[in-house]
Image (cartoon, rainbow, N blue to C red):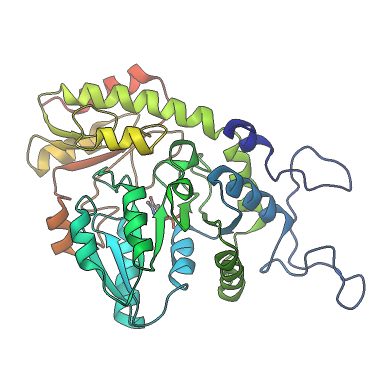
Length: 379
Ligand SMILES: *Cc1c(COP(=O)(O)O)cnc(C)c1O
């Protein structure tokens, strides 16, 4: 089955009582036993729920995994994943990762004895040098947020595996339509389904996908033990959103490509970060490991913070808001919004400066989006 067929059919047929085409929402906390020890496969919704299972089977099929668990949020997915490790373990992480990931890793290092090393993952020698005997994982986010750097998943997974560490990829920015890390050697894939997978900005959720039996068993244990499973209604919304994932991702990319090219020609723009531009430093790598370039762009305004604020507040279609991956276009200021909690020294080092603006390009009319940004950038 091709991906587009899987988005619509994988996992969805859960109703043997009435044969409904769409998966029902099993809005129940508990399930009746037939006798001692016999259930119809479910006993309690924290442990498992058929609506959640439908979404889990769907996402596992899309990512090419054998097992997925869907979780209350993207951060909950990352929290659960950190529980594969213990006090004293070292994790090497992409230095320009999502702000919430950096905040959570800081909590785990300050409170639970994890050691986190941030590395520029373009530099494979630097990754190799950061490896210690206690290194248990390499945390890869590509494209990175908000700078859209691309890191070589296959090469970094090899470094991890040569050193008995797990390779984990946050695949939120591209979705399985545009990138499938398990096929490139990753052990664990995490998602904020809040973003492209759901795609309609009306639910917060996450997912974790694996393809090895021992990781699947631990994952099932952790989600149940930590009580992080996604609510059935939220799982149902994400399952509904995924049905249009393929055409949405195509539409996001058509618009993002046109917007990036228009920004690159604008004299009030210093720099555009979009992996689909031939001028992007890792354009060739993006072409090799991705199936598309996605809908996220960041750019630097040629001007002071007053001008940046003018741009952020004068768009009429792009809304000034956090989050990404919905059908509507959003504009945000990473330094004070999505990455406000990031360690200031790390922010400065990786280049998240005050001039930087991030766009989540939606699926509105292409020319409307281009004109909206052109008028906001007039000064
Ligand atoms: C949004 C996001 C998260 C966190 O997900 P939530 O659903 O907001 O908890 C993690 N990683 C990336 C790359 C994100 O964009």
